[in-house]
Image 1 (cartoon, one colour):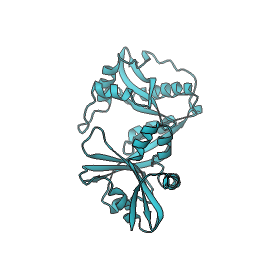
Image 2: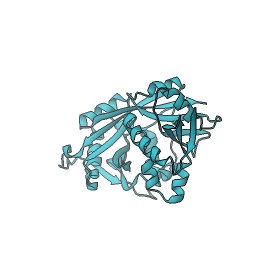
Image 3: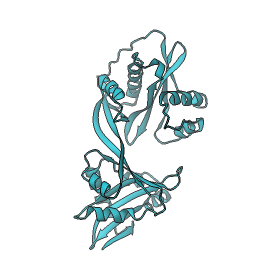
Image 4: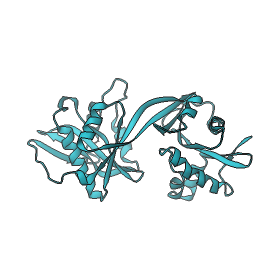
Length: 291
C-alpha cells in the first residue's frame, strides 16, 4: 500500500537522497534542497507544504514537488517528480493524487530521452512542442569590435524603456496564437530574481530600434532571452551583430559559458545560433495533463 506523507524530521533525509537521484533521471527536475536552503524559515515551511514523499512497505520510493500557478486558474506545475520500484505508473499516479481533482491542467518538463516519459503517456499526459537548450563557450567570441555603419547599441533603462521593449517584443514574436505583452508584463519581468540590471540591449539602425536581446541569470547560468530582430530587417546579418554584443557583454560577469533556449521546430533560429557557435546540449519537452 502506498502512503503519502508530508515532510518532517523523520523522512527529510530520505527526501534528500531521492532528490539527488531525481536529477540523474531528468535533469530538468528542480532541486528542492537548493530552494529550501536559500530561503528563510517561514519560506522553507511554505515550500515544503508543496512537497510529498511516498512510501511502500516501509520504504520511501518517490516524491513530488508542485505548485499552483499564481496567474492562471487551477493550473499546476510539477517542479520535480521521481519514483523508484517495479510499479512506476502506480507510484506516479499516487503522487499526482495530491493535486486537487478540480485542476484544469498540470504541466511538467522532461528531457527528450527520459526513461519515465512512457509513464507520463500512461497517465494521459500529452507531449507539447520541444525546446533545444544551447551553449556557447565565450572564449570563442572574437574580442574585436566590428564597427558597422549606422548601427549602435543602447542598454535598457528602467522607468524609461518599458514601452519600447514591449512594442519591439510584440513585433519580433508576433503570432496569431500569442497574447501580446503589456507594459505591466515587462515591469513584472524586471522584478524577478533572474533579472540583471542593464541586462537588456537594443539594436538601432539609423536611429530606428530593430532588435532586442537580454541577459538573465537563472539557476547559476547566464541566458540570452527575448532575442530577435523585427521581421523587416531579418536575413541581413543583424542577428549575428546583436548576438556578438550580448556575448561580449556577458563576459563582464566572469563566466565562461552562455546559454539560450529555442523552439525545437525553429530551424532558422537554430541554424543562426549554430552558425554563430552555439551547440545543442539538451532537448526537452513540456507535457500537459488536462483535467
